[in-house]
Structure formats: structure tokens, C-alpha cells
Image (cartoon, one colour):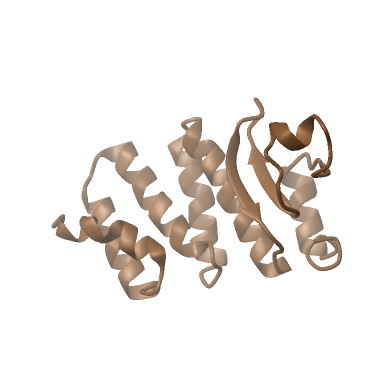
Length: 152
């Protein structure tokens, strides 16, 4: 990623503002096994306690890396649980990067987060409807398929 994504000014700025980046070699005798680094690049999003919330393997284009990082941050807040903050990160992806590979998952997780917050099943139905209309070929539509049975 050093050759493509990281030199991009927007990516560098985003990482600098939002992360404490650490590079671990797969061959590192202690940290490689601890974080199960089998392939490079492996991009892990950890919380302050070092718990993993998101893992990506392989290279990203610059325009895909930022939404991937936003998704990871959202998953950290989802797991804390700080659902309103998670929702804000998932919403950033759907608004600013609607064509990214991460957008369908962000739609799904945003709706689930909203459902957990207010227990309104309409949020689950809306996940299905949004994915069906905007991302019909996404695996996330398959995952949301049972929600189509929930009527508003």
C-alpha cells in the first residue's frame, strides 16, 4: 500500500487524524502470531484495549481505503457499544462514498445500529429496501433478506 494508497494526501491526512498506525512484519516472532498476520498487507482496526474489530487483507485503491477505515472505526464504536457514534461513521460511508465496496455493509450496520437503539423494526425493513434498490448484487442484500418480511 506504500506505493498506491498511503502516499495519497487524503489517505495520509485521514490516518494521521484518526489512528495510531503501527506496522508489523508478518515475520515478527511475537506480534505476527498474536495478531494472526498471515498475509500482507493485513489492515487491522483495534480499539484502545487492542481488541480487533475489523480486518482487511490485500491492497486498496486510495478511494476505497478511507471508507474501509471509516467502516472499521464504526465497528469499534458498535462494539463498545456507542451505537450513535457507530451510526455516524456508517452514515459517512453511505453519504460520502456510496459507490465504495464498503457502502452495502455500512447500510446494513447503520440499520442494525439504529434498530438496537430504538427497537423499531422499520429500521431492519429499511436495510433490505435500501440494499435492494442501491446494491442489488451485494452479499449484504442476502444477509438482509429476512428483514423483507418485516412490514412497516
